[in-house]
Image (cartoon, rainbow, N blue to C red; front, side):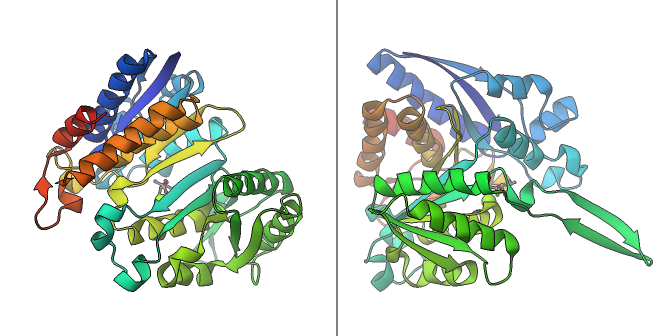
Length: 356
Ligand code: IPM
Ligand code: MG
């Protein structure tokens, strides 16, 4: 097969981790006789520096004309004070929205080799952590109207949050379909005791749930969900929630696994073209030192192969190689523990290739 992959290295550690993932993709290409063509684009803070905007028009066009996008990370304190309309994050939001990627899947899975890295008690971790947050990605307060105005001599800021039936229905379907392939258990998270958007969310979720009698379905309020994720994470299989709740809960979910650097994510819409990225940020504090963990990005490439390219075998080969490297005791700084062998970002990439 021939696949065009748009590459966004981004800012901070982005270039280092994406370089390792590209090495892995190239190796898979040779091994399985696929032609992977990379088209690299500028987006994020580096694009602001170079072009005065975080997403040049040609960059967006290349995202819309490819088979999938692989992204490292964008943003950093250097661009904290630029105009909101060109902020690095704006590039990400525009790409998500223009590509129609409404379903963001963020797995929270404990690597048994790294169980002691979890901040949770052993008695909780030993029950297992293996769930996925299905986050609605192109609606809600992230994409509502916003304004800051002056009234009676003071500033007032507004952010509008809205959801329409069709937006809720399509993400509900993704959640139930995902659960069918996993533990057949969906928990929809909302704030229906306060918000109208949540009341509609719950109503539609309950309707869609009727089409999936084989999947267990429950609602949970978001504050309770935040608590339950640290108290008893083993109860979760699929959490489906709106954009901002999903942003917050998915960070919490990844943290409890103890290895935020290891977690990939996929963002998909109605077609097979998606965007894949590790869930961690650009980590400017360690950028350029070759010590970042490239595994989250490498596993994102594996997800791309499975979900967008229908290459299950290739995807599993990458996952297996990652497990072997961990079993052999190799660790990047963020997951290092006593008695293990510390390796750099590029050495980790090389090791994964060696075990492929
Ligand atoms: C994420 C990030 C983004 C988001 C930021 C960078 C805009 O936190 O992908 O979770 O809030 O969606
Ligand atoms: Mg986030």
